[in-house]
Image (cartoon, rainbow, N blue to C red; front, side, top):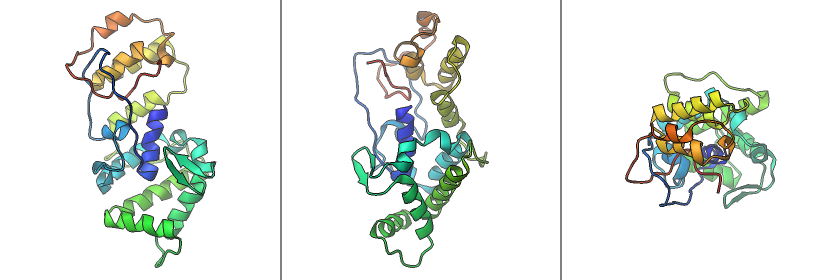
Length: 232
């Protein structure tokens, strides 16, 4: 779940998030959809997420899933706000409110907000970023579990990954198997393998791990999986 939250914080502040590699584990194929690098890549250098249409896809998917499920409380209230190695001397909610208020101002007095919007305009994604900030503020203020989203741009694969990662139901064998089969069907076989053997939440599930592992497609190379090892 922490890694999925890095996707939200990346959208929020364009941060980087990376994980260590390992060469001694079993290797399986892992789907790499267009948004895949947002999980393990560098947000500061990622060009894909800076395109308005891609920002909108991520945003509409998050809206459908629910921003209030994605946003950790400390991100809104901690002061200073600390994410990775970036320090911002204001709480996250205040930051979002101020960004929304300053967008349409002719001259923005605050240096931070002025430079923020100058960068967004230079990238030609300022109007989309404004919509995202406005929708996030609305979701937080109203405590919305989810918001109406544009179905034509929602990414169903990302939505299903979020639903697995943020499940609040008790994890029984039937649900665990459903999650495994979903990952396998979507082509995230390394992630499916990790659910079987390398994820703490799934350790007590009474399933035939070896038999299920045989349904996965091996690979010659290791790709950072969507669901990382969390038992070591």
